[in-house]
Image (cartoon, rainbow, N blue to C red; front, side, top):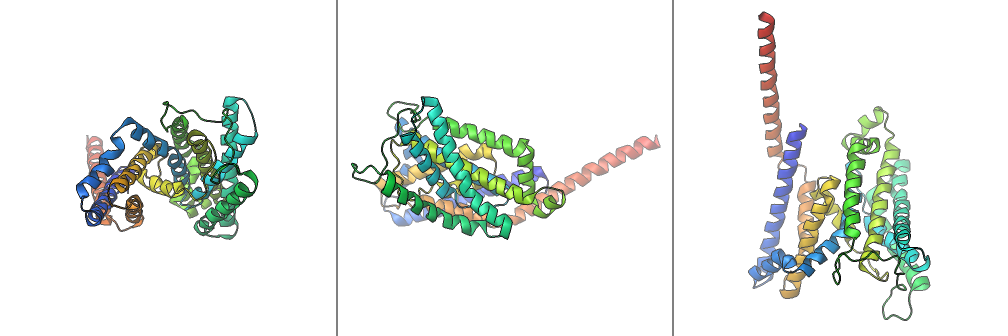
Length: 367
C-alpha cells in the first residue's frame, strides 16, 4: 500500500475505532444510570466548564505525554513494552530524592532531578531490552513483572529509609524550593512542565524522522529480517528504543512530581504507563501527535471522574473506552475490506498514469 493510502486508512481506522468505543460507552451509560443525558453532559462538557478544570486536564496531560512518547518510540520498532508504568514511578522517586537531599541553584537543581529520573528509567529498560536481544525473552512478560518489582523496591526504600514520620500518610520530606517546577497560573495545577512535555514531543519527532537512529528504528519495526540483511544492528536498535522509552518515562515521573506535588507520595502504580499505550495507538506512533492524543485522553479521563462524582456511572468507563480502542487497533482484520479497496484504487490510478505517460512517449518518438 502506498504511503498516501496508508495514511488515509490509518485516519479512517482510528476514527472508526473511536466511534465504536463511544457507542459502547454510550450503551453502558444508558444501562448504568437513570440520568444518561446528565452523565453525558458531565463527561463531554464538564472538563471545559471552568478555567480551573481545563488546567487540571492540562496537568494530567504531562505524565501521559511522556509515557506516550516512550511507547511511541518502542512501537515504532515493533517492540511492546509495559514497563513505562514502573519507570515513571522509579524516575519520580529518584528525582524526588535529589530534590530533597541535594541542594543546588534553582534551574540547575531542576535539570539534575530530571536527568536523574531519566537515567534510572533508561537503566530499568536495559533489562527487558538486553534479555530480548541476548536470549529472545519476551519483553512484554519481563516488563510487566518489572512494574511490580519496581513498586515493591520503591515502597521498601520509601517506608524504611526516606519517609517523613511526622506525617499521617506515607510520603517523603518536602522538596526544596529550588527543585520545584513553578505553576503557570497562580492557584492552578498545571506547571511549566507541560512545555517540557511538548518540547520533548518535537524532539522525539526529530529523532524518529530526521536521524539515522530513528530511521533504523522504523526500519526494524517494518521488517526486522530485511533490516538485519541490510546491515542494521537489530539487537542494538532494540536496546536503544527500549532505553529511550525508559528515559522518557523516567523524565515524566520527575516533571510530574516537581510540578504537581511537594512530596513524593505515590504508593501504588499510577496508571500513566497504560495511558501511554493508548496515546501511542491514537497518535499512530507519530510523536508530534502525542500531545493532541494526551489532551483527548486527559479530557475524557477527567470527564469520566466528574460523571462518576455526580451520577452512578463508574469511573472505570475511561478504561473501557481505552480497551475498546486498543482492541480494534490491534485487530488486523478490522476494516480490511476498506484497506483492500484503497490498494486496488491506488494501483489502478498508477497504472492509468503510466499508460498515459507511455502513450505520450510513444507519440513523441513516432513524430
